[in-house]
Image 1 (cartoon, one colour):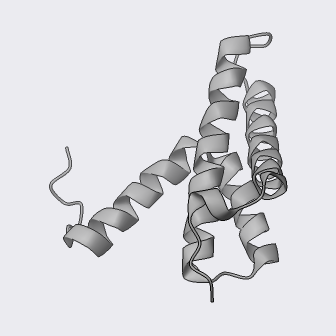
Image 2 (image 1 turned 180 degrees about the vertical axis):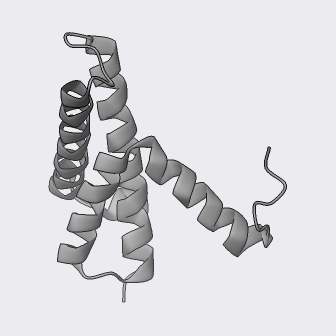
Length: 109
């Protein structure tokens, strides 16, 4: 198998990852609007949600590729993590602490 790095994926692959993850972010923002957790017509809040979702979607894509997750499952996980937004980042952080440092996270404030 050829080793992959971030530059070895096509722009079409990145376009799909961005589309799926940002759609997850838009759905999350829409849910927040309906529950009153976000203000209507707040462009900065929407952009923040979309950028966070795109970032976490790319991270999820890389983790799925590194773990050998089937592509369709990875695509679903990209969309789900895009919807989770910053919550997914915090979960990745906890996972990395436990796996790489051995911390149980008990020392967090």
